[in-house]
Structures are given as C-alpha cells and as structure tokens.
Amino acid sequence: MSVNVDPDRDPTIWFCVRRDGAPKNRGWIRDAPLDDLPRRVGARRGDVVEVCVAQDFRPVRLGRFPRVFSERARGRVGMEIRYRGEVVRVAPTWMLATNRRFRRVLDRFLKQRNATADEFTVNGGLRAYSARQFLLDGGGEGVADELFRGAPLVPPSPSAEEDRAADLADGIGNWMLANLAPDGALPYKYWPSRGIVSPADNAIRRFLASLSLARLGELRGSSEIRQAARRNLRFNVARYFRDLGEGRGAIVEPAGAKLGAAAIAALAILESPASDEFLPELEMLTAGVNSLADEDNGFRTFFFPPERDGDNWNFYSGEALLFWAEAVRRGAPSAPTLERCAATFDRCRRRHYQARNPAFVPWHTQACASLYDQTGRSEFADFALEINDWLLPMQQWDQRPGLPPDLWGRFHDPERPDFGPPHAASTGAYMEGLADAMTLARAVGDGARAAAYEVAIARGLRSLRQLQFRDRRDAFYITKPERVMGALRTEAYDNAVRVDSAAHALAAAVKILRP
Image 1 (tube, rainbow, N blue to C red):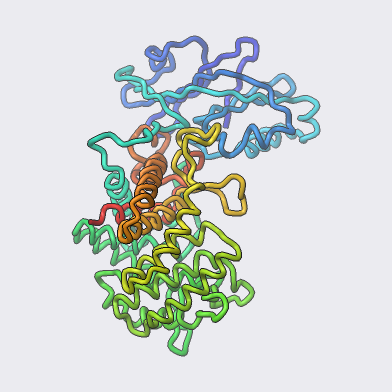
Image 2: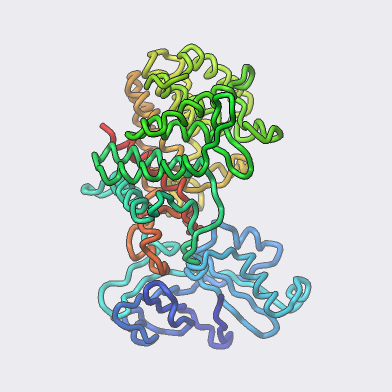
C-alpha cells in the first residue's frame, strides 16, 4: 500500500519500477536527476519508471480531511501519515494505479496497527503534498513523459491532423472487439487495478453497447463489427428477455423489470441489421413499452416491483419516447401513432418543467429530433433546443476557478449534487443529445445555437479522450492492457471501466461522424 520514509532525511522523489504493468521495485529517494533515475533504481530495458517529485508539503487537520483529500484530489495529491514516530507516504500515482480512496488508505493504516481514530488524533498527524509526475523509459532512453494525474493531458483544441471523434470511436470499437467473448458477452464492469471483471451487472447498459456497436458497424461498413454487434445482441436477448404473458415482453433482472431496459433492447433490435432474427421479441417488447404509457406522467417506469414505479423517470421516459419515435419511423409492428407520441411528449415536457433534471435532456432531445424529422412540427425542435441551452452551463471549462485541466469538458454542477456525480457515461450521454441538438439548430437556421453546441461537443470530445486508455503512457500500471485499451475510465480519478461509458461515447462519436 505505502512505503515508509525517514522523516529526518525527508526524501522527495517517489519511484516505482514497473515491468508489464506490475510493480517490481518502489520507494523514496533523494536528489536523483531524472535522466539517471532508471539506473539508480535498477530499472532495465523494457521497464517503465513511474516518478512523483513531491513538493508543497502542508499539514492537514482531521476536520479538513474530506475537503483536502477529496475524490477530485485523487491522483494529484499525495498523503503522508505520521503515527507514533512512523511516517508513511502514499504517492498520487500509486493511489491511481491501485484505485484507492484516501479514507480507505487511512483506515487500512490504522487497522494494520490496531489503532483507533481517537488514538490517531492524539498520536498521529497528516500532511498533504503535490507532485510533478513523470514516466521514464527503464533503459534510460527517450525523453521523460510528464503526466498530469497519471496520464498525458489532452490539449483544449485538437491538432490540424487530429480527428477526435474518429479516434474515440475507433478506440472504443477496437476495445469492444478485443473483449467480446465467444458467446457474445461484453464485460459490464472491469477493474483494471485488480485485473478482474466486477460481478455487477446492468441490462440497460449492456443493450446500449449492442446499439452503439451496430451503429459503428453501419458507419464503417464493417462486416466484422456488424457480426460482433449481432453476437452481442443475441447474448443479451437470450440472457435478459422474458415473456410476461398477454403478448408483453420485458428485460428482467434480479431487481425487477425496467421500462428503460425494454425500450433500449427494443431500439437495439430495431436498428440491428439482423433485426429479423428477433422479431417476436421486438413485438413483445413493443407491447410491453406500450403497456407502461401513463396518462399523467407519460410513462410508468417499472413493470415490477410496483414499489419502484416512478424511479429513474428522467432517464426511462426519454428512452421509451425515443423508441416509440423510431418504431413509427421504421414501421415496427404495434408502433404507436405520431399523435400518441406527441401527446406523450407533452406530458413529459410538463413534468420536466415541474422538476428539471439534466438526466432528462439527452434522451428527450434524441426523441424530439426523431419526431421533428418525421413531422416538421416546431414544438419538438424548440423544446430540444431549450433544454440543451439549459444544460450548457453545466459543462465545466477553464473559466471555473481551480478546475484541473484534465476535467475540462465534462458535465457537472457542483452547486447541485442532487444532479449526480460527474462520470464518463453522463458526458457521453449529453454528447449524444448535443449532436442531435446541433443538427436541429442547423435545420431551423439557428446558426448561433449550432455554433454553441459545436463548441460544447468539441469540449466534450476533449473530456472523453482524456478518459480513454489511449497508449502505454496512461496504461503504464495495467497488467492486462488488452482489457482496457480504447475503453474509458469512469473519471480521471477512478479507473474502473464500464460498458455504458464506452457505449454512450461511441454513440455520440458516430452521430458526430455521420454525414
């Protein structure tokens, strides 16, 4: 977990020699120039040396622990723990590589020493410190790569030859192909630091991957990607689809059956080049979504259990309305009429005004874009543009005081924690909606809005590329790089990989790239 230091000599350079991602030698030393450091610490050709040059040590009172050692500080701030003459430091990059939280590190330290929090208050202390971070070639060759929070910084603007949407999509597509199991499964959640798949699961997010992978296959005209998407969809349908009786179908998980899962599964089937294979399931899923239409709220959100009905309304109502709109467009069996879609849209709009939430924006934007495209009715375009205007100030950029540059472009309102924490999946989802909002703004001749959305999309792409495992420099601590390359970390300070982070980002990139 950590390395003891000599408080009298106070070494300031942390090193970790890694071979194929695994730590082989680590510790603290003094006064070692970077160009000679690999030799000094016994690194050899093929190794990489992770380095933190510590600076700006400052004491931290226990009452300020949550503020100083916050989630956003992980990977940038190191922690020094002093207790009964012992001094232990945990380097920022080590925190990232092990994906540990500060509180967990301190609790583990105390548990190993059988010390209580009260004893630590009397006999211990904390210091925080900053650190410049570098990655060195173990053979002493090449130039040191300077890192920011364990990864190279993606500049605010792309270079002339860079296509961030294409690079994002290609990386995610390659990750999906590399991690697709023979039975068609994709890992829902993967822990890079431990090199294992999480037991967690979520059917909606798995079907999102089926949908986005199929869209990538169509965009690239790739039979390999199309076949991979078909195998993945077949796996998901076989695993989760259930006949509820009376002609209705649902996507069933141990915790219940959600409107959003049925809608996204049906949309994935609808858009699949192999949709004919799943026509019975599509018809029953359509009937299932239809059965949850509600005269007051637009939709109920759970088939069962009944006590969860109403949960996640901001997400699921938009997913269901988007499926309805596309079912009408494609002439799906049992699809509702456009008039019914419009009436449900009006109910959802009214409820949104009663309690606005950013989670509502991307799915309803996509539904409005489909309905506007089919009807030309201005109310759909006007509402989509209005809600995206409301969303834009939540995108964080360099004007936010103290915002680290690796967080630029994400969506988060720190004044409204009830809107949820920032993460890759939400940024990707907002980007999907913004891509459609930009198309709508152009369609109605609103150049100012189209330009504003284009700027937001460019900034969002910067954020998503920052979170993507792109090369050896941001995967230097990964022992199984094939499991992560091209995937997205949940946040700059949380390296967990989730399939919905990849799926939303891929869907957004495909929309941006599509002519």
